[in-house]
Image (cartoon, rainbow, N blue to C red; front, side, top):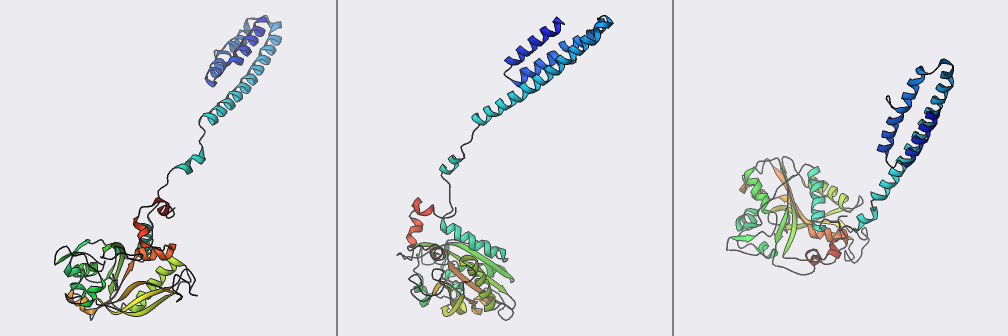
Length: 338
Ligand code: DAH
């Protein structure tokens, strides 16, 4: 009996001093394990005189129950302590994340990507072309011969007499049609260059060219495509209006206006009171251009459009001066693309 009492004292006092789950487990094995000390006591019952066995057995079992619940209690205590320690030591200050300098897409990139993604979803493939271009592709292949007045519309940076910085993404129309027979459905986003600089003109800016050539393509296809673009960019109520215009590479040609996204068409300072904002040039591909690229203009028709990405971004975000895009002022740039 004294052995039982001694074991209780030793076991419980050691248990009290346990500071880790591992030492607790070791202690448990030492007393309650298969070859443990208490188990040893149970086994020794057979060596006692028969009349002492029941009381002894009952006492050992009592101790076993006592120890088991003491171990269980200590174990949950230590687990809780461990949890508290980890919560304290591994604490993550989530508010710190906001102090990280987050990047944002440049508004021109953002708008270019938005427009491209909408067109890609409609089946357009994306092409890239050279920024240093020949006079041939930039002008002549697009029905703008050397002395054509339309050249004046585009203040060109010449590198040599026949090499220039492309003034438009339209040369990709000719480059593609020379190589590929219809069906053609492509866009070409990219930089273009003009010797011009004020609040609404920059010497370098971005355009997205679009070209569709196939059988039975009409102006209605152009309008439907632009209406889809406009409603996704500026909201479902946006209307698209065609006005007659002139570009040598399209016939007929149109200027495309959208209802002003600022006033919804009522008239405001952004739309100069007209309710409409001009956003791009477009038209049906001039048969002369189709033929000079080797495409049968009796069989095929096409539409083309060219839009200025900065212009769309300025309208969309209410940006008053195109130069803001290129000044690298983080206070301006951080407002977009979050
Ligand atoms: N390239 C013209 C410009 O920069 C815009 C344009 C007009 C493109 C009509 C087209 C088009 O594809 O059909 O002013």
